[in-house]
Image 1 (tube, rainbow, N blue to C red):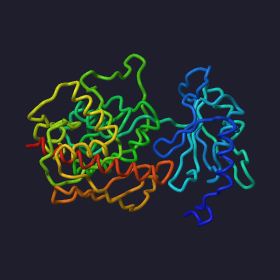
Image 2: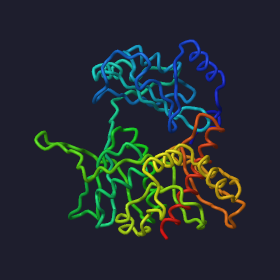
Image 3: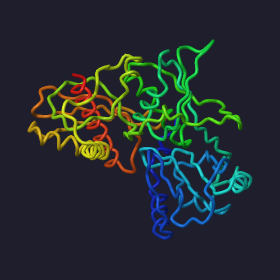
Image 4: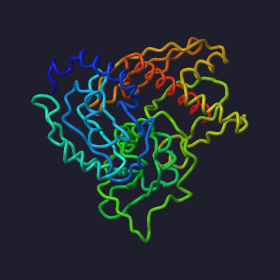
Length: 378
């Protein structure tokens, strides 16, 4: 357990970072609990990184930031990307990833910087990033359909490329191997899929890294067309819970979970088609509005129906060992008797205000999902 001193934000180090950012004009973006530089940087003339171009850096002092780390790892060669994992307090989480344009430069970084003393008593550990991109989901229903499962996964998380199923002696139920386009996407999915399946389908699955994925050069894995429905990007922080049914207008067909898969896991089986379909162009606009700002979309729906504007109560519960923040919410709409309640989990934003706003978006998204899933099931 970290001592109290390690949890105190070092304001002097924060000011040094701010000064460095102003002096160098470097740009950092906060994405899903990590702070990212580059990917690529604004000026990049090197090759696009391939396999074995990324290194994993651990044992970083919690008050060390990019003003120390980026120049250090840039001294080996040009950085294509640098990602520092952050926690809610504003400290780093003790590890980061540096990606170069060439595998040989990554090897140089390991050779030159592994064991480097960043400050007295603190030596960095630098090694090759595994960059695993395959997860194994176990204990799925025996009649799981790969195409429907792929669509479900693309509703729940991002960058899912393909799904293949496996069953046989020694395998309980059905297992699925899921390929992602990046290690980061696979890592984020690994953290949230167990809880998401439990909340949405009342299904307990296990999710672990697939130990090895070897492809035969004569028979490489290719995405099957039947396994590739059009992806619909949803925030990966939503978890559904039962909510009261209310007569909202039929403005949107929400991103749907395949009925066949729902039957397999015990979820709703009714069609999700609205009684009054809208044009594909209007549908796309509504879907975009739904995904971009659930808070704004819920505001407009409440305004259109005259039920009054929603009031949000967000309560912090705890922080999980994987860095996710857990909140309970209560959303009261004046024209609806029962309040909407539920649990959400999100990754911390760059500030407390941004984090609270993200929690509000997650709560609004869950309310909308509940309203429309119930409406279209009748």
